Image (tube, rainbow, N blue to C red; front, side):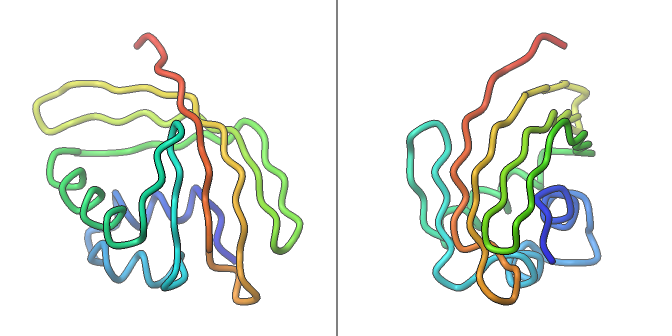
Length: 117
């Protein structure tokens, strides 16, 4: 069962997996994501995460609230990112998602709020 924290860990921190391998593990082939009102298809999300992974040293997710009802998933988390040059990025993220019968994400809709670090 994919939880968003597990997906983020595999996509950004687990260097034993490529971004494509992590995406296959957590996302369906027709996956799409909307962040702050902007939709992206799976190919665009993977390309963005591949580029992002190159600049980050570590991403830490702290789950604040989580609702998991098989196909429906919602959560709120804090993500703290440290880049290779020492920059710190901290955001609060609100997520609503849908999963398929294999519990992989088919759609994620999220809104982010930048926090002071």
